Length: 299
Image (tube, helix red, strand yellow):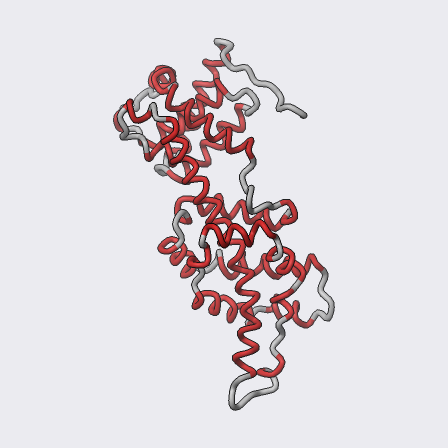
C-alpha cells in the first residue's frame, strides 16, 4: 500500500519500470525489518544496562550496600544471551548500521523504571528463574515500559524511520517474536513466499488498474470517485486483485485485512466504506463465477 501510494502520481511510462517498482517495494520491506530488529534489541539493551549501572554505582566515592550489590542477572539471562548470540542478528546490526537508532538516555530511563517495578523485584528475588521467566521480564520491558511510554513512542516517531507508518505491524511482529523467538532468522525475516506475494500483488494492482476501476466505480453509489480517499481506492484495487488473482487467499481474509488497514491508515469512515464496497463486489464476482479459490499447497 505504501509503495502504491508513493507511485500514485507517476506517469504510465514510469510504472512500466518493474525494476524501479521492485526496488521501491524492497526498500519499504527492508525498512520494516530494520525497525523490527531495533525493537528486538531495545529491551535487551535495557537489560544490559544493569551492568553499566553496577559499575557506576560501585565506583562511587561513598558507596552503600545497595551500590555494591546491584543485581546484573538480567543482563545475561538465558533469553538475552540466546538472542544476542544469533549470528544473523550480529550480521544485520553490522551490515545495516542499526546502532545509531538507540538512545542512551532512553535506555537509562527505561532501566530506572524497571528498577521501580514489582515485576523486576520479583524477578531478582527469584534465586533460579526459569527460561520462561527470563523471557517474560524482557517482554515486560517491551510491552509495559516501552510501548506504553508515550514519550519514547514520540521519540520513535521522530527518530526511527518507518515506526510511525508501521507501528501496529511492528507490535504484532514483536508479539510473535516473544512467542517463537527460536524461529527468527534476522537474515531472512521475510520468507521468500511472502516477498514474492508482495511483488506479485504490487504488479497486479498496477497492471490491472483499468479493469479494477471498471469493477469498483459502479459500486461507488452516492460517492464521488474524485472525492474518495486515494488510500481507500488503492485498498479496493488491492483487494479486488486478491479476489481475482490470488487463489490461495480466502475472500474473508482479504476483506477483514483491508478493513483493518483502512481503519488504521485512512479516514474514520473508511473501514465501513471499504467493507461495503468489497462486500458488493464480492457478491457480483461470485455471481459471475469469477472467484476461484483453492487450498494452499500442503494444507
